[in-house]
Length: 472
Image (cartoon, rainbow, N blue to C red; front, side, top):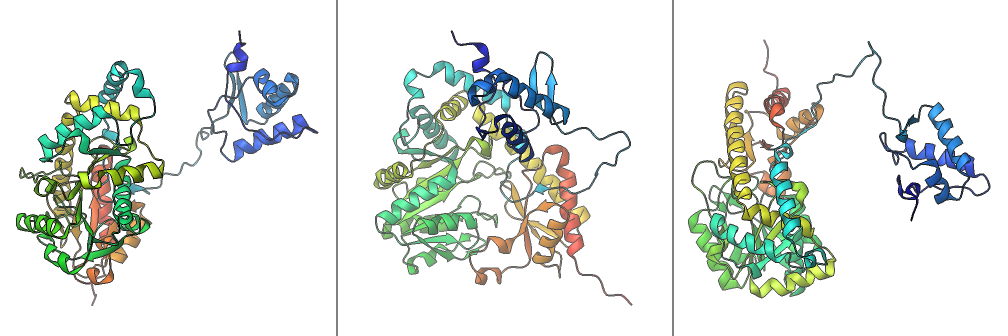
């Protein structure tokens, strides 16, 4: 039977010079603590185990540990081993930095990670592990776990009006991976150009370009993308956010949805629908997915990031039959896969109704935040206006007269915030010239206890950037 000491502690990669073993071990441990590879609070292997791993005498390792304890770098705890020492507490009366710097991320579309339902997720994981057959722990199908695809097909049909069966679902590592797979599949069959909304994520345009497609910006107005411009572009596909355009906050009008569906059928083109926050409409007028109007031409994409947490890394696509094999081939070529255990847990969460409860709870929280933000801006920032559909996790903040986006962005950085002007989302310079100075403010990410301070800091950043009134 193996001795306990042989299986205890960490595996450490330490370069030891065979000509000066003890000295070089001491130097290697000290260097690992200085550069952070051995962080405070880590328990080191027992001296006997480390000596066996490195081919040293146990007494040599014990002496090295003792010297580092004497330096204050390690802590020897009786009966508990040797630990990397933590950062000492400041002495009484010592000056503590109480800077008001926020370091808050207020970019559009980010959820509050502190709202993650740990208990519900823990129960779902336990159910998934208890119910899963042994085969579920082997290498999975590239399209994702069958149980999750079945659960998602029912959920999306019920809540978003999506037309799909389990066979049409592909589970991915978020929307970014889905977009990359679909774009590469389109390029592999000869596609060269893809229409994008004039404002959107620059990272999405980068993904499309990396896949070999040229992004072609299409203008936006109060009814969403001006889809009647698509016929003249000669594109093979279009990426669109029809329920809640990101970041301008307008929905694609009913007439333009019909026009987009007709164009896709007539042109034999693919519509990639990013339904990034379609569940979060606050005014009671839910807008269903575009996909139902043209299921044979549309790739519908969504994620669990807003309702649960981005850290889960689970997204999905409803892929039409004409594109499905090509997308799965790109998945094979990428070598990527989504965590099967998380897929099983999400399936259990959906089946138990806990995912619906998470969505409803998040919707109520973010609706309340949007209302509070509007009140705070109205009271604290005269001349500014909150715009955009009452939905999602962000809004537009139209700046008071004479205030420049670039000046606000400088003020934002100076006080430890992170959010940007609308111009930073534009696909080209011509788009920027057509709109007044506006900031994109996310209200989802700050934890609840810091929300009002965060909005106060937004107001302060705008006030700091406002031009001085003339005197005299």
